[in-house]
Image (cartoon, rainbow over all chains, first blue to last red):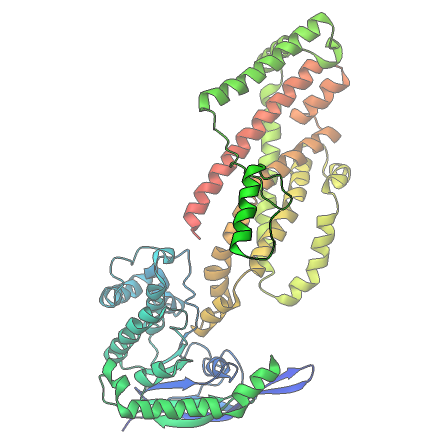
Length: 264
Length: 290
């Protein structure tokens, strides 16, 4: 029986535009238990990043509130690890100093922060690169460094916004395995956004499919495949059934395909 | 007579005809070779450069002695060399050099640091930036040298007024460049910092400043030149010392040789300062790695 780590209660977002208020998010409610890996999938413009910004406290929702560990955390920053699509590694800092950024901002003494970070860098594939600069790293390694920075920030809840979107297909698969290993080692609660349906099903315990205009949750699908996940599970009938359902929801959803064409 | 019917036979016939007539047929292509430049060896280049220098100086000297060139208005190399020796031994060379150098350096340092801090401060508040911006642009458009007589009047004829003119020239350049850096900042970078719970001061110290440093460093070379110009113009207007004053005085007393001497010394000073600042920029770039 796990506690609810994150509760998004009736959160909605309206943006004022010259043409009148634009409903980016219809009221959304999510309850995510501790230690779960939950994915959000949906077409572009369905408000995934808006939800993340609201949960991270970077945006005040027009309605509703965000509860972390049962306490109201709406609009407060520094409570969750948030990894954006870009790795945002600072080019003037070494990989080690980049990875400890979160701890540094939280006033952890540098020596201790570095001591905590070094074993992680070594264990998770960045050994030998600690004192180099981000320009020496490949795309996959940069994402790893950014993920480690998010992890070392030491919050229980982590938001990952399409972290592997910019990687080539093979690196992406390697990074998924790496992320699974990391997740099972640390037991964090993860909220993962992606466009890749297979990736979402492969990694998660639960999927929320979203629709656009306004952004809302169209369906919630539990993924009960056994863990640890193996690549061949992507070929099992259960997996394929879930995938088919997702694709159905994403295609048949009238707002996704037709409205996008309208806007274009 | 070739047939333009798109057939292969027709096309082959056309090519054969073009070859025979040397490509003179309209629509056929001329055959050219890639233009290639062969690089001279370094010795040849240096020899040419030295040769030009010696050639010009000799022609000048000979011209002055034979009367081609008016020796009074142009002077000649040997007179200039003599005057240079006098300038350095019994003249004010070192006082003047020191005066100009000090006013340049102080103006450079003051203008660059104040300007950069001002530009960086625009990050703190968009409202404050919007309010101050038009004033900065106005100041940028005014030719600062036009303000020099006013500055001299206010600050007197000592070192301070020259420093003030040099500062006026360098400050606005640094402000605008630092501000350009601030505007180029990726807002996602700020987002990252705030998501980690950073205060504004932390974002400023750890993100804004390191990010804008390359911008600030890139104008150092421009600023040293501007500071020197400011110092010299200030000396032209009113000064007791300095290389600019020496040039003016020599000009007014028709001591053309001394004019050349002062100009040469000034040029050397300028080159030394420029080279030093370039080296400094190189060092800073390595320390600031982007």
